[in-house]
Length: 515
Image 1 (tube, rainbow, N blue to C red):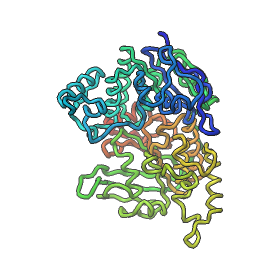
Image 2: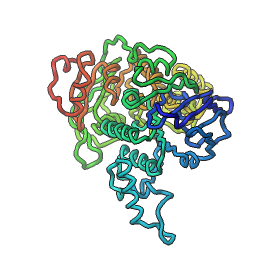
Image 3: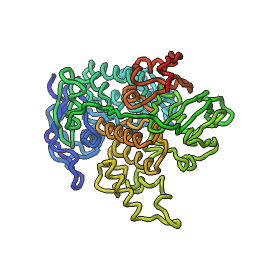
């Protein structure tokens, strides 16, 4: 490896009495892709905020060196001027402006005190070409998909002649093709001498792109490994501090009576529109986990949202829960009262009030159980919340902790707890492990196994095929609103499921059709 471009020495950062980083040592070479791995709460975000100038020099101990010289960033602009570009999960773009305007925001060329629009668009074309990104500079950002917006952020960094790209969970919301394109782009930048700090929970991406991997745990740098000389199992062991022999713990299951029955269901996005979900039929039984897969846009989330009374107009078909028909006009509150709960894939948008406490959330969907004569029974509410808090092993000081301050895995546990507190007969989980680390995933899987063994029926939507196969008793795959399957996990391969997701598999074998 070449001489280090960036070095941190004994970085320690405290927030009150909590130590977020403790003597973290890290280095990045020129033209190197160096990945940071660790569970949520391990210190990854705090470290990149120090490197990005969000936590200014003087608020932490230790030092940062750029090209061998001490770097003292007092603000994000100082970090940017030194050649560091941090691209966070929440993209900093203005949707109403064009690609070109966003690329040169705050740095637009001017003539006579006014923006020189011809020069601006010409410079934007040059930046996109330099960044090896094929986008039209006149396109409004609001018309771009998430993957393309990510590319605009990267192009802006390249246009500033950044020496270091820091990518924080860059593929969390991207399609498989967009992920491939992004990884190839980073590889091309590496060949041009641009360094990258890559942060992701997806270890297949980490190994596809990394030269070295540094593992953080409990705010400390545990080990740095050469990517070619290690494997996912070893990285996971260092991340969680223990051996995980079975990521998908199986449980013995004997499905019971039918909890949910869906027959010939067709649903349109809105009144008068053609059906998007088409002629879907399936059932879910007591204690069973039914997996639902498919590519982005196949209709997975729309199906769950419709069953929950929150999306679309039913054009035909029936939905029965515990033998009782659910009217297409039922509201989410009525569906919840009937015994069916939903954990949405977008927890921050649909599942949490970030400024509210953990305790507030855990009883939010089940206030009737802690209310008497129109008043909340605070002692009873606290008892129930404390029990869930302990059962779910939520890592926080107490119930009064705002959920916005929690790691992604702990936020997900709060959303799960809120749904479980309604005592659902059927629980629908939409991407329940998206954006959380391997240790938190294992805890979610154990929760799913526990509630299913207690008789709760579960629908599990996931874009990760190993997760579908590992956690499901049966699987159906959606393609353009239509279903194929069911597939039996013990007899199906990832390749066969992918073929079904692409609409290239229509025939069901006798084993796959068996319930």
